[in-house]
Length: 206
Image (cartoon, rainbow, N blue to C red):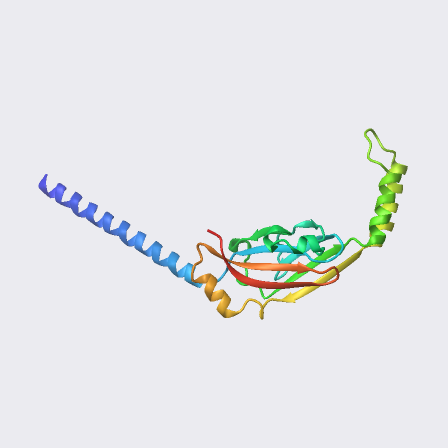
């Protein structure tokens, strides 16, 4: 009986030792993985400083599709310029888990500018084809499609690829990585009708 208890005690100690070693190994591997993971989260702030409304179609760091704000009204008038940047535009997030290639080296941006000609034609279109309930004939649907295509070409679509390497400097990235739990890269994306620019800073978000 004593021999059996002794064997059981030894096996229990061995099992507990194995559990402790496994937990320590798991923690070590996790720490190593995190140390080698240089991905960072990004807080995106889209601002339209132009004179026309725009629609942002695409924001793709390293070609990977990211969040887009859709329509942005013009914040370039004098009233809006008296506001703080945080009070205008659209705020979105691009978490570190969304980016499979660590810190992006470039971003592709595409947007549509609602020109005065486009807005005038679209206003006329809404008068000709007001929203109403009930069924619409195929002929009318086809006519609406043709008219919309004519209107679309009155607007302007722009595409830009912005190099992020000189913007996301090593010093800035080190500042973000030093406190990963509550610090993100903040990218401010500013549109001016036919152009767009990006600035970056470290943002403590909690």
